[in-house]
Image (cartoon, rainbow, N blue to C red):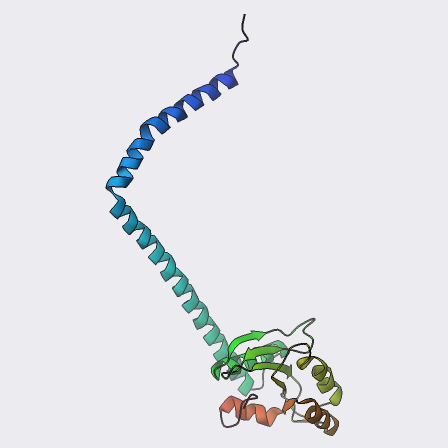
Length: 204
């Protein structure tokens, strides 16, 4: 006597039989439908693609609007001298974007090796900025500039390296080192001129 077929095996066989019937019956009809309505299906595909492209474009436009709104906010705060150190970095990035730079990135933070903002100038040169959000009555010392000088060109491959600060000035030692190392120093007065577009940008 043969082995009795279990309920699970019986159900499996029934499922296989139904699937086979579906393939034999439905597949030809589906192929025929696709052949007869190829133009409709193609049009539907184009519409789906167009919706996807439009959605991506709207998402990019929305992100740009949000970034423009945030740039406007931090630039107002920069004029009012009411920025945190992190917001100061964002403000410098906003100035770079406003004045035609591309590939603008805020990279400041742990392990930044001295770079806070990296961008590409309108003429293609690589810009590396270090942001020093200090009190207006302070001076930026030579140690700050030297630490940046050790990485700006060798690590970050800067064509234009600049230390930008809200402090009123740099010490004489810092100025002397910057001149030897090819680093631009931009104190508060020069920063204000850049922001108001009455003075040069770091890359000009």
